[in-house]
Image (cartoon, rainbow, N blue to C red; front, top):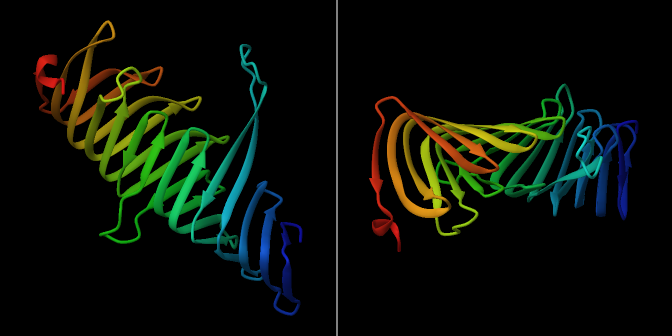
Length: 263
């Protein structure tokens, strides 16, 4: 039809109610979003604008961007979003929502995630990851040298690039130093909001019950650490490394010299 192309080894189409069942090497390509979902079994209701793939589903969306920067070597860049799960659903009636459930894995450029439930709001350029039950594992997200954990993680995109990232409830951020792979700056809080410029992490704002461990260096030599608590905090990054840590609301800090940190 004008929106989708469905291919498969076997396909049954009910013309009266516009319902399709496909099996074997299934692919459904959305022409508007340049998005393709692969799998082994598909059910598509054209009247309800609903699609289900519940056998080995894999989503692939190729995004081609054009760089106007003068020092850009490659004017064109291709970034691909991959999502794999046990069940995938597409809702196109009034909304443009894609949902992946159970054992979800996401990969896009330097960004990756493992979670129970992913909802992709395509028109809003927003991806939300959640845990299905209270006792389930929390979503985990990796970006560059940083790892994020929280009850819910929302990623906001703009023209295919990550603009903001919000971690709600029981948030935890871990950042590995590029020169010392056993030294991890880490901060926990109620929530954390990350801001990106040109897909580069610029700032992280933590709110509520902030606890942090921040390693210190003297001309790139290890020089102890600082343990801190505060009501809120802001961490400023430079070239993906922590450049500044600012604490607000009754902050307390303890310095631990390197001789007490090593080992």
